[in-house]
Length: 357
Image (cartoon, rainbow, N blue to C red; front, side, top):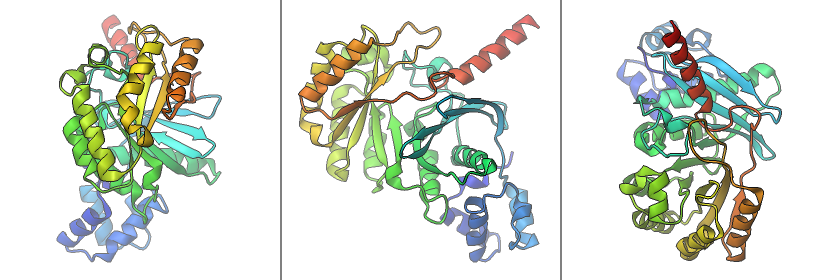
């Protein structure tokens, strides 16, 4: 199976072409056709000679994902289910905000982190996505926008879909370099956010990358006992280690970090939990932001959404203690909103169909 051409950074594309007897400038031509003109086949690259086209076609492909389902919400959110060449499925989501169009991408087929509230972890990781497969999610969404003819472009990216990005670190970093490239999609680093559940060694690596891309940490609990109950990764990297890594990141980058906190009814949403969170973050509050997330209930998971009053009390408690925070604006509430829900439903349908057969 030929890899996706989107997996090559511009430097890697240049080196590969030169190694195969081509001139370096061919990379600029190919890059322009891929990301500026956004062609869907090598044969459309009109100023690239036939020999180079044949070389590219022999070793790479442009379109490897197949759209199988597209759900559109009343608020403009679109959730795509893509099939990979090996038959696996992934989700990608386009969201509309006042500040632009944001795409949430997937980095793995399934997830091994196993957070007890998350639809993504219902099925364990099958494999990592390649950098090309991650980039192609953005390209497919942009092609969808192009075909509508409204001149809209993807302006923001969140790496928060199915999987743990730092468990697929190298491919995730190549993806980030491709979409941030000024001669390509040119999506600004400060318009890109990567979320991790807290793989501590990779948090240190990310801090050392010397890039302006935002980091979000899925915290979801203010103490080790509670976090271990709902996030088994806390057994490997408890909160003390997480906070040390956060301190390193803040000192190294001087960039704000976002703490993601899903509010689960009568689990982690009480005022006492908010006060614990204040204590945990008080010495980092100048560069911290807490993103409070109303929970989207997932079938077969025992959790419910926090009440509006609990969400408000939690929010006000943080504010009263000078912790910057906000409640996430919900997108796509009338479709399979939670990450992994659409994929899980489709796999469940296939499984039931097979059992009946």
